[in-house]
Image (cartoon, rainbow, N blue to C red):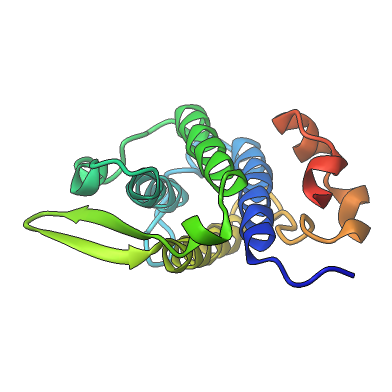
Length: 187
C-alpha cells in the first residue's frame, strides 16, 4: 500500500465535485416550471440563486488558482443566469477547469502561494488551502440546494456516491455525461 497522497485527494475531490454537479443539475432540470426560481428558505432564497452563487465563487477561485486576475469581476452580476440550462453549461465548464487544475497538481504546486484579486487588495494563500476552502464551499451550498429540492416536485438526489470504488454501481449516468470511465476515478 502506498503512502497518503494529498494530490490524489484533491484530484478525487475535483472528480466528486463535477459528478455531484451533474447529478444535482439533472435533478433541478426535472423540476416543474417556476420551481427553479421560487422563493425558498435558505441562505440564498432560491435554487437559482444558490446555483448561481456556486458558479460565481467557482469562477473567482478557479481563476485565481489558474493565475488569472478576474477577481471581484466574477461577482459583477449576482445571478448571471436565469435559465438552468445556461447555468449548467457554465458550471460544467468551470468544473472541467478545476479537474484539469487538480490533475496537474504536484506536491510542490499544492504548496505554492497564489494571488486572489480583490478590490484594492491581493489576498495571498496556499493553493491547498484554497482548494480545501473551495471544495467545502461547493459541498455546503450543494447541500442547501439538496434541501430546497425537498420542497419541489423532484426528490433530492443522492450526492455522496462518487469517491469509493463500491459506489461504482451508482454513478454510471454521471460518468457517461462527462465521458469518463471508472479508471479515471480510481487513479
